[in-house]
Image 1: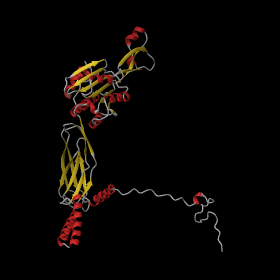
Image 2 (image 1 turned 90 degrees about the horizontal axis):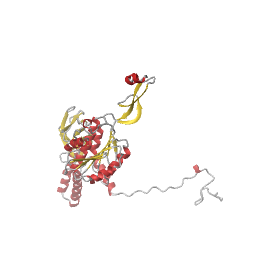
Image 3 (image 1 turned 60 degrees about the horizontal axis):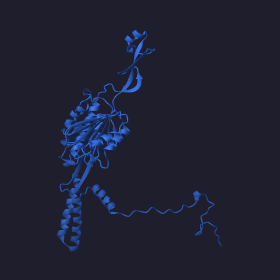
Image 4 (image 1 turned 135 degrees about the horizontal axis):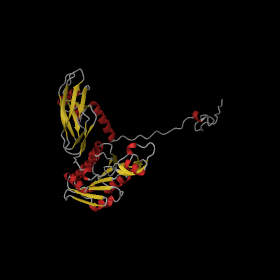
Length: 432
């Protein structure tokens, strides 16, 4: 019997049946994605994960390799001594594994009394550990990273519900943001072959604020606008008197000016011009090329911090501006935290700070600009021309090897300050 195959019914090499709907047709073959070849980095990653899982340290790996080599050598050379040494090494590894069995049940509390301190203030933290298990623990060790150092604490054998606490000193000798933690316990054998780490706490940040000095305020005339700046908008009550106008129903009788009313024969009330507080923009130059040394830069940061504190003492709106970003002055602590983080930057210059002040704080009536000794005075004045002529500009140039000078031309005052303790005197002279 002869069977005649219909076109597209499955004969080898025939075309697919186009009479079937697309969903019933056989899907086209798709080549699988190319598998990347195994690299040395992949092998290292796998070995590191395996080593972390079993708690084997580099010394343990070395001993394990030595055990394997001794076994091979003993079998090939028929040396019983090599096999005995291999068994001894294996027993040492087995004892080390016994030290890492199980997970400790600790309750760990990290206490930092003050997370915002001034540079040079002695600060001590505390780490308390409690055995929350039902069995006595073996002696162990807790490592606590503090900045770039690691504080190691020896934990003795603890009975159930027993505790152990130790204090540690937080380094505050320089301005910084210090990261403390995470605290981790280390279970390991006395030979250092095996060890298993357990994290117990997160990372706590301690802000070491720059040193500051108290600056003169309104009483010296530096910020002399106690009533604020006139806004051009009229109001019925404020501090800036503008004019008299006839009384209309609804006016507060306390604002009636009786002498003028008696003279004109009709009630006259005082009209005021609405005033606003001075908005202060504090710009600090972070350009590495602006400063001759690290100490000079630290003095500049302390200078900016001193102006921040003075602005908040006088309840003026303030913003902190650097070469790359602007920070609104929500609280003094937040701005001082930002000053604890700042570092010198490459590929930027003082003009970037002024431009950012102009763009982000156009309503600033007082602009404080802090820079270093490598920025010449004439360049500071040229840079200040980028700001509004209605802004009072106080440019502080930190110059340790020069005398204190104050030079005011128009709305720009350039203060050359040798050290931080000279800043109040320079500000007082600029306010005259």
